[in-house]
Amino acid sequence: MTVFRWVAAVLCALIATGAVAAFFLSVSFDSNVWRDRANSLGRWFRLLALFWFNVEVWGRVVLTLVRWGR
Image (cartoon, rainbow, N blue to C red):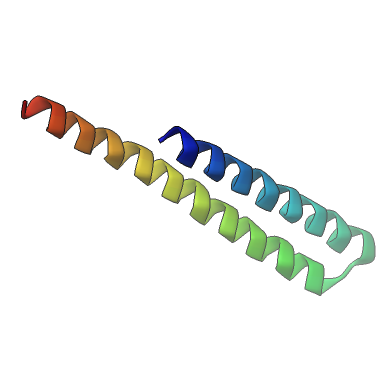
């Protein structure tokens, strides 16, 4: 699980950095293309964060059920 947490954290950080950079570029140059990219990266960030959360929660549920059955 630790490897998954690190991979998810690094991917979230990279996507968030890209989203913030795209947002600042859209504001700086008043460009709709960069705004759309920032929105797209923000959606990907939320998707990855929710996927990580679900894996963490359901992983704990499965571990609890396995340990409880012993």
